Length: 309
Image 1: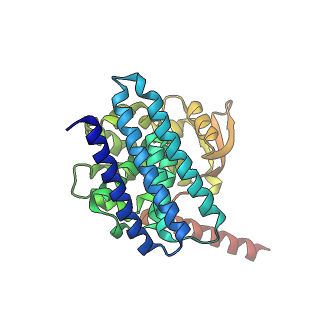
Image 2 (image 1 turned 60 degrees about the horizontal axis):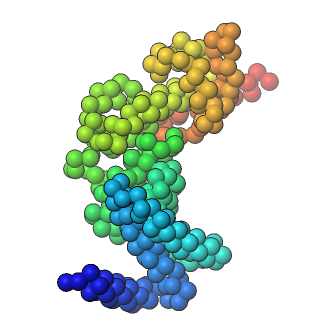
């Protein structure tokens, strides 16, 4: 088969697929404009796949760079137009919202923007029930979400840690990633050390091991702060060093402050830090029990103060 014949056949197949897709879309979306933008998202996804294919070949052929940029630009234009349409309407069909955020997530993954991928993927899951997603896609989304949460600038795992999408990895070789996510949520350095060798089997985690260590120390610091009642929010450098196993406490605190995960004041002379605020977190059952005790103590103090007055 000649190259020209193959190209014509590919174009014909593409047209047939788009025609078939259009018929299915019209059945789901009564609004003609919604259907058109849904189709634009599908076309954008096709450009993303083409861009990924070209990117993989660019290692051996740098002349493909302009083609890669063109596919990216086309996908971005289609997605931006769809986003503008959705934002201009008081209400659009769930199917369009789901498709838009699904393809936006894929676009962010192509550009290696992990935090943006994480946000878009969660929005996709907000508009589409997990049981309506194919098993293979469930596994892929769960894996990508955990990786993005771990090696991206994400320090709040509440939206994902109890999400049913994670169960797609149960019984697979990547099931340990669920446990790893819980370890980071708790800032548990000891458990991380115990399973660190397992991460060697995941190249992207292995190559980001230094970042993971630093991130875990920050999560450990947040867990320490959150465990304290307001009257105990003055922490010594020695206590922080012992809990987080960090060598430079001040550098750890400055990093947490710069990320706006905590607010407070460092006293270099006294080697202490006063924490006035800490990023909220989603609590597990044990943490809820601890919070209940703190509330009980607070209520008793309020009652005592009222009796004294």
